[in-house]
Amino acid sequence: MFTKILQAECIKLKRKWLWFLLFLGPAGVIGLTLVDYSVRYEYLIQQNPNVWEGLLHELNITLPIAFLLGGTILASNVAHIEYHRSSWKQLLSLPVSRLSVYTAKFLVVMFMLLIASAVLLIGIIGLGWWLGFGFPSSWKNLFVYTFYPFFSAIPFVAIQIWLSMLFKNQGRSLALGIVMSVTMSGMRELPSWFFWQWPMLAFSDYRNMYIIAGVIIGIFLYAAGALHFIKKDVA
Image (cartoon, rainbow, N blue to C red; front, side, top):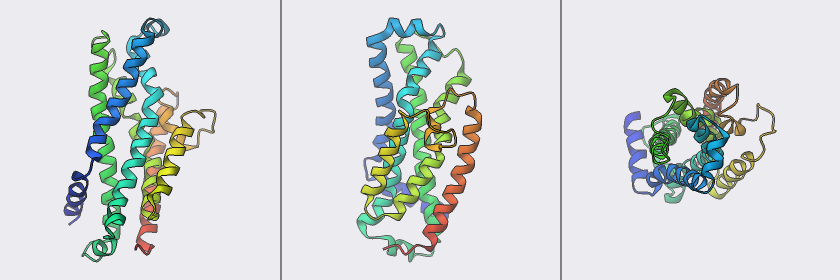
């Protein structure tokens, strides 16, 4: 039954433009970095003798905020579908648990973000080739820096899904997600426990700790949101 719920969620989203976002987001990050290198190529090359490491540092400027904005939009839309159609009561009257419905929407958002990360990985390899860097000097670092935001941003995504399921007016959850995404990108002096900041810390010495903490706290926030949704009267 849970598999059918997941399939139903994917079918709902198939009719929307969200799947295009999975390619638009990575393309935007790659495009901005390409423009940056086109304008400041000599300067950027001189900053780091390891051209691939330098490229990853430049990507880290735009990637976190793009990832958080993407998570905000996806989380809002999986809830907006039901509110827009006024189909919550119809959906919840089916022989499925509220926990299954909430979990399905959470997993769909995470799966879409994982796809976006994979698309970005391919785009980064292509960008490096286009800039004449050849293949990555360290495939491990490439994978780590590409997928780091996915794991470190799980708490943020869990919060956004929780808020999106809570508010019928999606403008509230969208506004909060956008404000936090944009604000956090320029406030790296905040305490390290402030998990909205974690996606920006890919080059931190404590990167692995943020990944583990992101998964653990993300699961906790998912569980809290699911419990609240189970008890909530959804119109």
